[in-house]
Amino acid sequence: MHYCMYKTELDEFINFEAIGTPIVSEALKIWVESSHNWQVELGFLNYLFVQILERTKRASLNCQQYINCLYGLENTMYIRIHEFNRQFIDYMSLCIRQDTLSLEEELVQLHNKMCEYIYD
Image 1 (cartoon, rainbow, N blue to C red):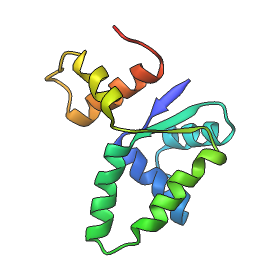
Image 2: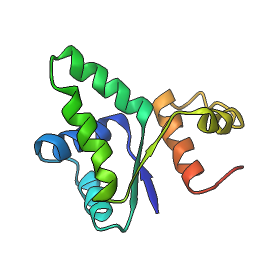
Image 3: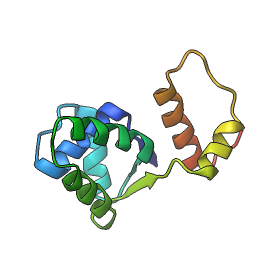
Image 4: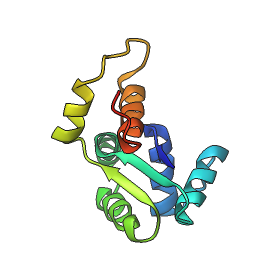
């Protein structure tokens, strides 16, 4: 099973992993615990991570700490950092844009479908 985090979830997750801030969302707590137990693949788009890093930098906080933490998690939990690369953009171009969803919602849904090999 795979779960892709939205930007707010990713932000909460980063703060939990990097600086120990408690996770507020009960659902996210379950996803993170399951991922640490190698039961569920937790994922995020690096595109959303960059947005969080930009905000972190504007707040004069240490971006490198977050980068090191997230990219170091692949050895300690079941996590996938999905690059916003040509493969993803090609996959995205095959899908019809849903005007009822925000770009973030649509990207997360596409990421989940791609990770589950759903190509319809």
